[in-house]
Image 1 (cartoon, rainbow, N blue to C red):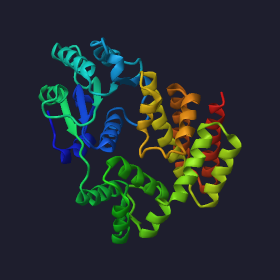
Image 2: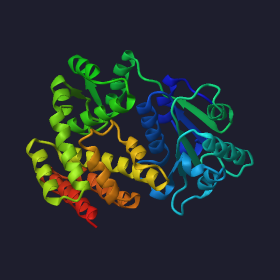
Image 3: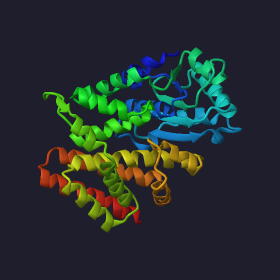
Image 4: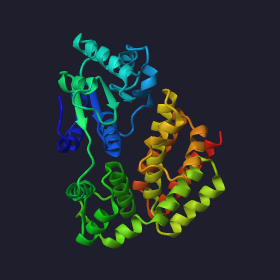
Length: 354
C-alpha cells in the first residue's frame, strides 16, 4: 500500500501494533521528515519504555550476501515482549534482496502480521524503484513518502503539535516560529519539543496553556539551548563537577527539573539509536546523522567522544534511570524534584566513567 505525504502523520499516530504491516518503507527527499517519521513509528509500535532487545538496527552493508538475515532477525522474538522492530538504513541491492526474501516468508505464513515490523529508512526513490514497488504492492507492505513542508504546512504542523500538548499559540508567537523554522520536519519537531519543555508538561484535562512571543524568544534562544547542551554533554562524558555546575546554572535561570530530564532522555534515546546502528555495522560518521537537527561542528567531537564511552546497553540503563526520575518528579514539589533530577543526572555521569 502507499499513502500520500499529507496522510502519513495520521496513519503513524493511528498505528496499532497488533495490526501493523510486516514492512514499512519510509523514504523521500526530506531527510528530517524521514528520520522523524521513523522515530514516530518506533514509538507507536514499541512504546517509549521498550525492552532494548525488541529493537535491532541494521546497516545495508550488514545484509550483503545474507538475504535471509532480515527475516531471521524479525523472527527472533525477545524473551520478554510481544513485538520486535528491525530498522534498516539504506536501499541498495542487498536491502532489496533481503526485503524480497522477508516478504516471501510472510506469504508463507511464517511471520504473522503484527508480531514484527521491519522499517526501511531510505532517501528519495523513483516510482519505478524495486524497493518502493515492493512496499506499495505487497499486501503486508506500506510506503510512506516524506517531502519538505511548504510554508502553509508549517503553521498547521505547529498548531497540531501544540494542541497535542494542550497549548494554543498567539499570533505573534506563530509569526516568530514560522519565520524561524526551516521546512525540514526534523528541525521543526525538535524546536517545538524545546518550546514545550520550556513551558512545561500540561495536564490534558486542564485549560490550554498559551504560548506567547516572549516564550518563543526565551525557549529557542541560543543561550537556553547552549546551557542544556553543556549539561547533557558533561553528564554523558562523566564530568561530574562540570555537570553539577551546568545544572546549577539552569536551576538559577528557573529551568524546571522535568525539562532537564526530558532533554537528557531525548539525547540518550538518540545516542542509543546511533550506537545501535554502529553495533549493526554503520560507520560512526553516518550514525551521527541520527541527531536532529545536525550537530554543531563544535559539539560534534564531544558526541563522538560519548560514543566511545557508551554502548547501547549502557544507554538503555541510563534511560531507565531517566524514566524513573521523570515519574518521581511528577509527584514531587519543586525543591525535591530538582534534587531528584540532579541525583539521576549525576548517577548517569558516574556510569559514564565506568
